[in-house]
Length: 257
Image 1 (cartoon, one colour):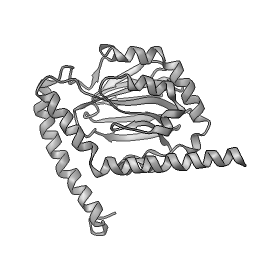
Image 2 (spheres, rainbow, N blue to C red):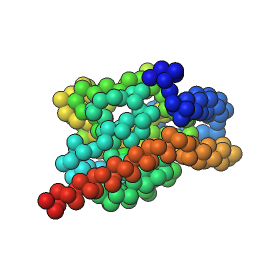
Image 3 (cartoon, rainbow, N blue to C red):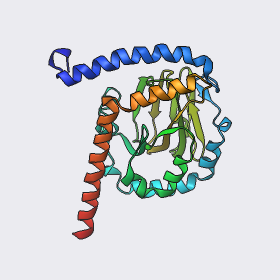
């Protein structure tokens, strides 16, 4: 859609994104020196104690995922929840089952995955958690995250063979997922993802607040709170709630017919 055909709301959102993004990137450069963890593309997941608890319980999470995947076709595409993702994906090959999105709890989704929910809720600074499902042959083009105040964690749950063909590049380093193992990285580095296998890949995708020293820690939480109330996040929240209601009604119809 060209700028000439944008609605007023779309133009306003684009303006906020363009200028807001520039402000965030300026702030995050100043905040790097306050980070209590490395600012490298990849970080050692083992340096975060909570990751061990998730990895120890990955089969519990996987069992709940398996139940969800029985209705895989009903799971929404990422861009159906977050319209901002249309820049990265337009097909049906990247699906997302949200538990938390930017601090907002998907109550009905969480009720279907009680053990996974307990585990992600125990993670310090967790803001977002969902099952990220990539179909065979899916490629997510290179992009960068919104803000360095977060770190991203992927826990491998369903990784097809050959694993080396199911991979992620962050900056100039490549990695591949393993079932029951976590990957921690800074998504503000340019990164992209491939699933060049014949199977689906699923990870537990999480964003956590970057550990920072004072005063950056306070500023960081303030900025995250502002982002939480932007139109992008609020629209995604509404889309998620609408999908949950639709899914519940569809499930109830199956039961009674």
